[in-house]
Image 1 (cartoon, rainbow, N blue to C red):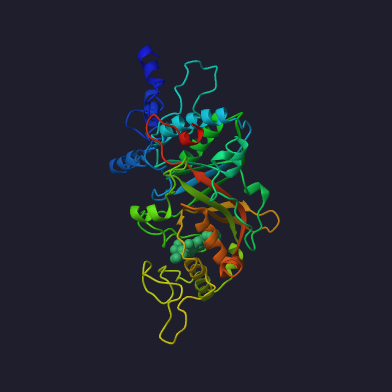
Image 2: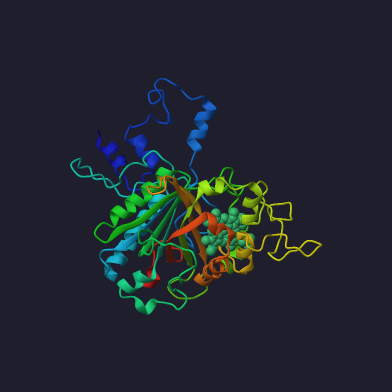
Length: 412
Ligand code: HEM
C-alpha cells in the first residue's frame, strides 16, 4: 500500500462509505457489485436507489438534542447504564468523549482514526463501514441517582423526583432505574446498534450496562402514523409544531437543563394472545378510537378534534369513559410520545410472545407524565392487555454547540 493510500485510510474525517472505497473493499460506485452478488448486477435505476439509501444526516449540534422532536426513525436501540466510576471528573471526560464520538457517528464517520498497527484492535468496531448515517440520532439523559452518585446533589431540582408507584405496575429491577440513558434511533438497526456499542465501549471502566431494548416502528412513508402491535395507529395526538414543542417538551428553567427535556421510559409488556382473542368492537372500545381510520369514536378522520367528554344528541359519551384515549385526554396534560414496539422472542414462563412497547415520552416537567399515568390508573381498559415492567426517568441535556460538550452546564 502506498503512503498516500495509507494516509487516506486513516484520515480522521473519513465517511464510512469513503473508508470502504479507500480500503478497496468495494469498487468505486459499485455498491452491490457483480462479485458480491455472484454475477448478479442490479439494473441502473435500482443501483441509484441503493446509493441514496440512508444518505440523510441529522446534525448532532443545535439548541436541543436531536432524537426528541425529530420525526421518528424506523429503529431504536436504547440502553441504560450504571456508573462504575462515579467521580465527577470521570463523567465529565466521558461526556466529552461521547460528544466527539456522537458527532462523528451521526455524520457517518468512523469513531476514531485507525492506527496502522494491525496488532491492535480496531478503534471502530467496523460493522457500520459502508453504511450511511440513516438519520441516526443519539440522545443522552441522566437520572437523579447520577446526580447523587457524582456528588452533584446541589444540582437536584424539585420537579426531578422519582415516580410514585402506579396502580397495577409490576416493575422488575432489571428494567428499572439506572444512571444514564442513551437513545439511538436510525432507519437502520445495525447503524443504531453500532453507535451504542461504540459509545459503551468508550465508557469501559466508567459505566456498565443495566438494560437495553431494541425496537421498531412502522414508519413507512413517514407521513402516516405508525401502528403498534395491537394494530392501532399510535402517536396521532402528538404535537408536530415548534410552538407546541415549546409548550410541551422543552424545559423552561435557566439552569443546567436549559433547552433540555425529561424522558419518561416504560417497558410495557403487551399480551398479544389475549388481545388477539378480543373482538374488534371491544378492541376499539379499549382505545376509544377506530382501528382502521384511527378516528376518535363518533368522528370520521384520524385527526378530527375531540374531547373525552364529547356526547351524542342523547347525552351519551362518544368515547367509552374507561378507554385509554378518554382517560389520557381527561388528564389535560400533553406528552410527546416516541415509542417503539419490541419483539424479544418467547416468554420462558408463559410460552407466549415476549413483546410490547418501549414507551418513551418527552415532557418539560415529569408531572405531565405522572398526571396522565395517574388518570389511566387502575381504570384504563387497556390494563387488561398490558403490564408495565420497566421504568426510568431521565433528564436529557440541552443541545450542544460546536466546541461544547454534553452536560457542560452541569459539570462546570
Ligand atoms: C402498551 C401501552 C400503550 C399503548 C399500546 C398505547 C396506545 C395508544 C394509542 C393507540 C393511542 C391513540 C392514538 C394516539 O393519539 O397516539 C394512545 C393515545 C395516548 N396515549 Fe397511549 N398507549 C400506551 C401507553 C401509554 C402510557 C403509559 C401513557 C402515558 C402515561 C400513554 C399516553 C397517551 C396519551 C397522552 C395519548 C393521547 C391522548 C389524547 O388524544 O389526548 N399511553 N395510546
